[in-house]
Image (cartoon, rainbow, N blue to C red; front, side, top):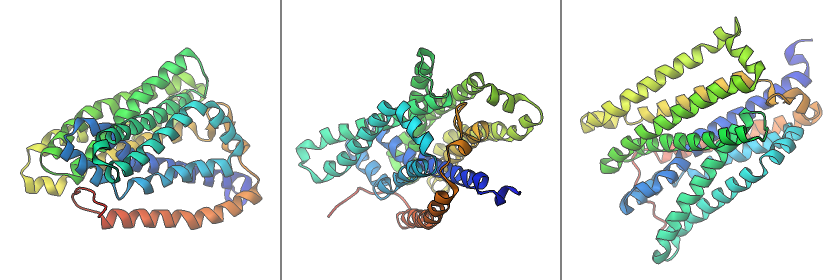
Length: 340
């Protein structure tokens, strides 16, 4: 029986691919607006208005990808969903509180009394920071197989800080693309600092992953599997080098040249996140919980998956089309977000 002739094989793979794609798109898209929130206290009041304006048309739709990923996990891999959320009960609660807080603050800072605006700005920063740290903490625990020990908690704390720095990095590159003048120059400096944190996070996960999993270590360092993995770190190194050079060279360019190339740091940041996710997927496939549960063991019945797949094939293109439309309509430099 061929691979695509057995629904117990190709359906779990298809749903793992859809779930992975949703997570990757979420990390890149909501990552930049969470990063803008983390950077919020570093800007002046008028700069904060442009920062809000740069993410205003997008942030709500960006979070749709998180709902899509969690929904696919629930309906396609219910056993894994239960185990993962049980292990992540506290960080998931922190993340949800943070996302709610930043959403409320986003609206009320503009629509509420002006005397309360500073408090809502602090709430927006706090919500963004809580969500970023919680997601990084969950990443660290997931890499180490959801084990709760002093070592795994320490590592999860490190990945929480590094992912937050990574979000700040991609958020800064977004501001480079969407803003101009003094705020753009500040964003270049923020991006350079954030890139160091992102590099530290990639290094930490790269060192810990093979140490935590003999299966991953064999996949990374045995022949011929190592040859399949080699293009990812090599390409990542080239992207990191290109970003490092670009973040120093672009601010020195004339304004006209900078306007033509200001998209490059964000594109490089997105490529870096994509390469990191590709390495992650290569390392852990077919595990849905590393070392515990594969996608084939955790999958729902094929009859259920077929019905869900039809629905996903309808919903996913709609979300993609809406996202493309939003980014097309609101392209160009950001202005102050207005509700009147």
